[in-house]
Length: 247
Image (cartoon, one colour):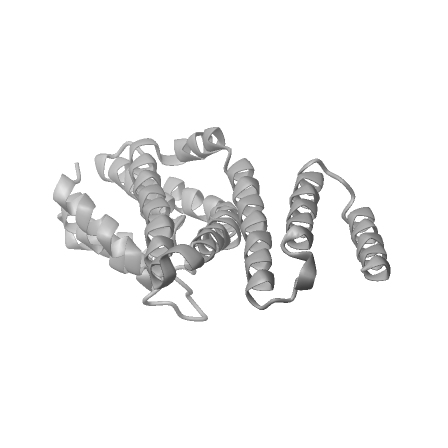
């Protein structure tokens, strides 16, 4: 019911959903800007369009990338309302139910996992390719981020609330954990490189640095296997104390 080119316009506008952010309504103005191209297609009657706009004036807030799933799902339900196959309550319920969970999912994956992993991987490449590593970061981050946004939008538009089940099959928490592990390992590698570069390893060469890297990797593995963080902290302190006494 919504032409493909109109869907492309809506997907493009979703990149700017934060542009109209306000403390009171949060992203609601941005959401209305995103949805605006769909109203003439769905509701030729002006009064019906006005009612559609009104129901989306309530406060709206979620992760700006994961919002693509909500935008697609809102269109899915609005198409049903326009056809007389759904109710306004379905649209409002869908939006209010998924705002919070998608915000948490987006924060955990994009902000706390993907961005640190892409940044750490790019930083590791600095000794090899220099400033070009910044372009590597932009490529790594945006390929994943833009591809997932497109997928979320398309899946939400096709399946509505079914996007939740589709997200479950992706095992996002598992990928978030793996990305954080990559970031931690890369950070340890960066530490070894800086230590050797500044000469802080002294006559012992790179051996202490690689030992620290191995311990860091073991620490990440231990955390993934549910090793108690407090015991891991005590073990790290003991190793550091022993190293300080012997070196």
